[in-house]
Amino acid sequence: MPAIVLIGAQWGDEGKGKATDLLGSRVDYVVKFNGGNNAGHTVVVGDKKYALHLLPSGILTPGVTPVIANGVVVDVEVLFHELEALGSRGVDVSRLLVSANAHVITAYHRTIDKVTERFLGKRQIGTTGRGIGPAYADKINRVGIRIQDLFDEGILRQKVEGALDLKNHILVKVYNRRAIEAEQVVDDLLSYTERLRPMVADTSLVLDRALRDGKTVLFEGGQATMLDVDHGTYPFVTSSNATSGGAATGSGVAPNRIDRVIAVVKAYTTRVGAGPFPTELFDESGEYLRSKGFEFGTTTGRPRRTGWYDAPIARYTARINGVTDFVLTKLDVLTGLPTIPVCVAYEVDGVRVDEVPVSQSDFHHAVPVYEEFEGWTEDITGVRTFDELPAAAQRYVLALEEMSGSRISAIGVGPGRDAIVTRHDLLE
Ligand code: IMP
Image (cartoon, rainbow, N blue to C red):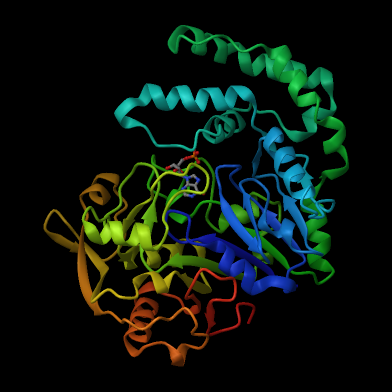
């Protein structure tokens, strides 16, 4: 029965793997519903480490059916690269399903992503350069290529030529680049058709049947709430809906089928790329969080920007997504700090505001109002129950829970898969 949505509460990289691990063997389907290979998670299984960018993490769990749903943009080359890498290490990848309606990232999307960023100069978004934005732009502009188009050569050629018509003018005349040959793009895509064929499905129908059969379906959101194209810090966002609503539109499973929404939130905050970040630190505390929390991007290797926990953002996330449970990660990174500041509100032009401001300029000007919490020095990485946590760590967690608008059901206390303190069952 249960359909569970798992999303990031901040700007990504919250450690969604911790929550996935908690649900573990109880999940039958893992669905990626937004984004593409801009995501990055390192999954450790036994003594092996896997870096996945496009494939849902469920691909590594025996018995789970991983699904790439219609809301995803698929770089087919990357898809096969990841599948081959896993296959050669003995991972069974045969159950993967890909929606016929998912859009395809082509060579021209990657090129346009990179040249546009360069052109923007100081105003750049800091994208991952994987062609995500341009592929979604084509989808909305109704000139996108879908997975199903790869099975009709005539249609594919027509669509690629149509899409490149204007793009080549822009590439040559505005960006001073070479035109992209439609024929080359078509040939590249067609080279994957036969391998793709057995995976392609009407995934909305498959998931509907699975839910009717009482299976557990986990919708794994890529990126995070504050990077959502509608509800994030626009324009410094990704180009898809990373919030829980995206699970419905991005998979074709109706919103009233969803039972639980789990948000993963870090015990502090990080962000990659440009855009507002009120609690960002530029001093040695920021450096401390970066090195102790190993805050470097999985996809691009970029150092992440770091800052203190922002409670208005957590509250905002709880509201926008209908969060039923938070999973708080990386609490152990804070061990050893004498005091831990938490942003409880903002001051905007001298006025205190308790909610994330709707105006972009106000959010840019938001100055955090901090409350200081007492730190702890005890190593908590071996702790497995809430009562065993040092009293100051308990107070920190309870304060975040009260401020953030939903229960904190689990707490990550270390890098290991089992380094989790569970307070409430995520499915009850
Ligand atoms: P894009 O998704 O490549 O278009 O990049 C848009 C913004 O989202 C940039 O600021 C990226 O750094 C950010 N972003 C995209 N994917 C992730 C992710 O998985 N974690 C964190 N930030 C991301």
